[in-house]
Every structure is written in structure tokens, then in C-alpha cells.
Length: 360
View 1 (cartoon, helix red, strand yellow):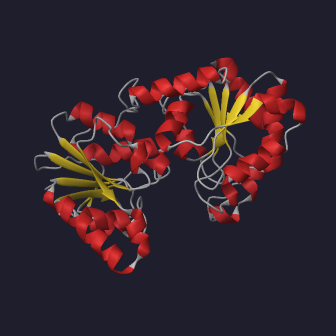
View 2: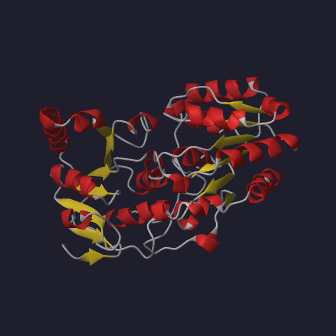
């Protein structure tokens, strides 16, 4: 079973499955439709998930997961004996769970090692062409994707095919689970804010990655134009992004600032519940974007120097990709294509948001 398969079924019975997707937030969220399909097709299987501590809060308590195995990222970064202790603890916990199958949905060196440490006799992973950092070496059942650049949600679904899972989204169900109390508090906040139409997220989860970020001046102009059209907005932000967002809002004309507010500090679960209240989302290709569209919020997003179809919403969610195809070169590293996102005009972004609002 060391060769590469399309979606050939695993011969041995599948009773206990370990999902390996350590991060990042947006990628972990896009596992949820595949997880929902896994539960629908194999309802009696025990499902565990190996995830890093910084991502875990947005997944905590998910009803489709029987056990989370949380890797302490801070301990890993401390180095030395602290790192070794955490790796030993984590490996022992995984082995004690006695998984039959691990499925590496990350396709990186680190996730491949985690799958190996789990002790699962069957380790499903991506083929050499579809993974990276040599992750295929840790898999003994390798899945070759029909399209290396296909949408991430479909990529995750295809990786579950060897378990007997259909590579299809459960109709009308992306697998999002938000605590009822959290959702109610978000709705109360939204009503108190007078139900603004648009959620904006200018930041990027990849610190210091200019190829993902639109210019502050253009964000300010977009928000001001929307305000002039009677469209109120709230700008969300994450760790280390507060100053960046304040700089954008400071550029707004004084008569437009009332219509564009800064979101309060939020935890990941709070942000997710709040984003689901809006009529449209506009922002960078980051975790917040996937929080929004997975709740069927129409989405305009900046894919940067990448093919939009890899990260775009699917399942019938309306979206617009704010993408300058004219400057994209798939042969160059993304960091050498910072100008791509700057090629998107304010006119294009405004038209995309207004179109989504009109369609909704």
C-alpha cells in the first residue's frame, strides 16, 4: 500500500480515525465540510483531531469530533527540554488512543511526523505531487488529487475517499457549529450596532506578507465610498492588527466615520459568531474570510498572487474574487508578486461589494 492511489478504499476496517490538521485557522475551518461528510457516511467511527493550541479555540466543543489532541505551540517554541517534553507527551497521548487510520490533511513535514507518531498502522496522505516538504514519505496510502490547485475543501474531501467517504459536501451543511449562547450574544451585539451591512477584514494572518494586503489608503477610500452609498460597515482585526486598522479608520473623511466602526476585541469564537450576522464580507484571504463564507455570508476577497479557485467559497455561496489576473505568474514565488494585490482598484472592490449586497 506504499504506492499512490486516486481514492482507492482502505481494505482494513476503519473504526478510529485521526485527522491531522494542525493549522492554520482558515484551513482548519475548511476541514469542517469534510468532517461533516465523514460523520454522515461513517456515523459510528470515532474521530480524533490533532491540532495546535492557537487554532483549537475556534474548534473547541465541535460535535463531530470525539477527541481533540492539542499540541502546545508555545512549548514547541521554547525549545530544549520543554519542546522534547511536549513532543513526548503529545506522542504518548496519540498512541494511547489507538487510531486505526490517520489522515494528514496538511501535507507538510510537521503533520507527516505527527501521523507517524500516532502509531496508526494506516497513514493516509497526499502524493508527492500534491503534498510538500516530503510529507508523502510518512504516508503508506497516498492520494493523488485530480487537480493540485483545486479548492481546499475539495482537497480535504478527496483525502477522505480511501475511508469510504464521498467527495461531496453534505447539501446545505458546511459543518459549522457555534455555541448557542455565543450566537445569541453576537446577534444582540449586531442589533445594538444597528445591523451594519458589511464586515471588513483588511489584515492578514501572515505577518509581514505584503503580497496579501491592500493599501491602507484604498481600504479607507472603499469604506468611505460604501458609507456614501448608505452602507455601514464594521472593521474586524486580530492580534497585532489593531494599530493597522486604526490607521485605516483615521484616513476616513470625518463625515464618513460614523458609518464605519472598529470592531471590539474578540476571541476566535466571538469573531466567528459575529461575522455570521452580516449581509456581506470583504477582506483578505485569511481565517476571518472563511469564518464568513462558511456561514453563507456573501464574500469579496483578495486572493493575492494565487488562483482564486483554490481558496474561494464553494457550495453556492455568492462571492467575488478581487484578483488581478493580468499580473499573476504561477512560476514565481508569491512574495515576489506583491504588486498583484495593488493592481485591484477601489472601483472594482466597491462594485463587488455592492453587487453582493444587491444579489442578497
